[in-house]
Length: 432
Ligand SMILES: Cc1ncc(COP(=O)(O)O)c(C=O)c1O
Image (cartoon, rainbow, N blue to C red; front, side):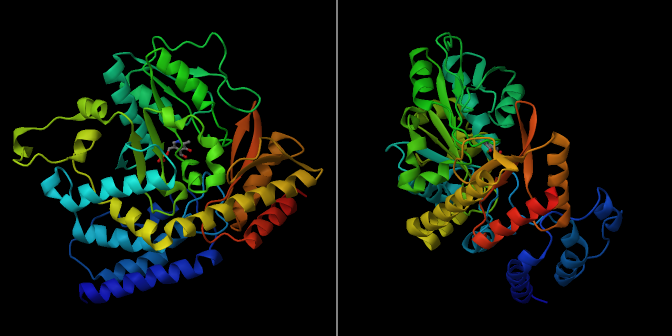
C-alpha cells in the first residue's frame, strides 16, 4: 500500500466514524485496564502495514473510546472537532512546520498572528492586542502568570473559589501564593471593600466558570487591580467564543481592561484539540518575560519569533486548523451553531424548571445547565452513573455548597433538539 491509498482508507475511516458515532456508546463501556490487557507487552520487531492500524482501531481501541464527537456528549464542556479542522490537522502533520523562529516557518508565524487577530475581531476585542496560540488554557494561564510575576516582581495570585484548577496548578508550579476569594450568591467573585491587591502579581477573573459558567465582575476587579499595580488575566477559555454572537457580549464587560485573556477555540469554536488563544495588551512585557535567543537561533532578519512570547520553543502549525475552520464556517456559520447551543441549553433549563421533581441550581448561562433531582446526593449520583452507563448520553457533576449537582453542557455541532430531549427523557427514566 502507498501513502495515497492508506490516506484514502484513513479518510474513509474518519468519515465512517463521524457517520456512525451517534450510534456508539458515548462513555467508553470498559473497565480500567481492560484495554491494556489487549495491547501487546512488547514493541513490534518488524514493521507492518498501516491497514493493520485501521483494523485495530475498530477492534481494539474503539471500545475504549469515550466518544467526544457524539451528539449526546454533554459532560465537562462538550466540544466539536469539525471536518475542516480534521483535514487541516492532516495537512499540518504533513508539513511538520516547527516554528522556532520566523525563518523556520514564515507561514506558521504569520498565519498565527493573522488568525489570532481575526478571532480578536470576531469576538469584538480591543484593537492592537497581540494574540498567539498555546496548546491549552492551562499553558496560556501559566504564561500569563509568568509575565505578571516578571513585570510586578510580586508573588501572589488572586482568583475566585470557582476558578479553574489550572490557576491553582500554575501558581503551584511557579511557587506563587494563591488567594481564593469566596463567591457571592450569583457565584461571582465577591468584591468586598477590604479586597486589596497591593501585594498581588495577578488577579484572574473568570468569564464562564467550569462548574457553573458564572461570570466574575471583571470591570470592578480590573479597576481595583490596576489601581494597586496588579496584572489582570481573564480566563474565558470556555465562554469567550460566545462573543462571536453580539448579543452575548454583555458578559464581556471590562475585558478591554485585561492585560491578558485566554479563549479556547478547541472548546467552543469547532477547532480540534488543541488550540488556546492568548492575547495580551502588553506584548512587550510578555517578550521581556520569555525572550531568550541563543546564538544558534540568531538570524540576520529582524523578524518575529512567537517562541519569544511563551514557554515553548518548537511550535506546531496550530493556526492552520483555526484558519480552515474560520474560513469554512465564516462568522455567520459559527454564530448559527453557537446560538443553537445556547437555545438548546435554555430549552433544557425550561424543562428542568417546569418539573417539580427537578431544580435548576445555578443561574442559566451560555450553553451549560446546572441542575439536580430533588433528593439526596446519593440519588443524584446514582442517576448520573445510570445514564452514563447506558451509553446513551454522558454528563458530569460538580458540587455547590457541598451538594452534588449535575451539569449538562452543550457544545457539539451535531447535537439536535432531539438529542437534548432524549437526554431529558433518559434522566427522568433513571430517576424513577
Ligand atoms: C474556565 C476554564 N479555564 C481553563 C480550563 C483549562 O483548559 P485546558 O484543558 O485547555 O487547559 C478549563 C477547562 O475546562 C476551563 O473550563
